[in-house]
Image 1 (cartoon, rainbow, N blue to C red):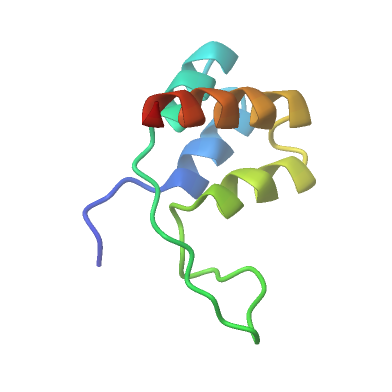
Image 2: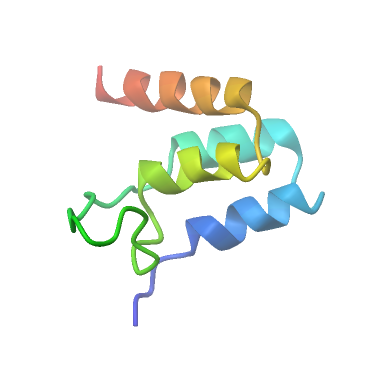
Amino acid sequence: MTDKPSLRAYLDRYAKGGIAREEMIATVAAWEFEEDAFDPDDNEPSYQDNTLHVVYGSVTLGDITYDDYEEITRRYRQRAV
């Protein structure tokens, strides 16, 4: 069991209206993401909860918009500079 917060749960709370958009974008852009584990038999590993793929999956589920995703990744990339 991990002590890290759940990105999936956080984005679910946002989708249900529990978090303001700007707060969600700032929080997710600052998230401590895990490396993606590659498994050819599992194209969306449910055991990985804190990856950028989870954020993109939220777009396909309609939980966040593509514009939200672009802003999150823009801010995330700025952290590395």
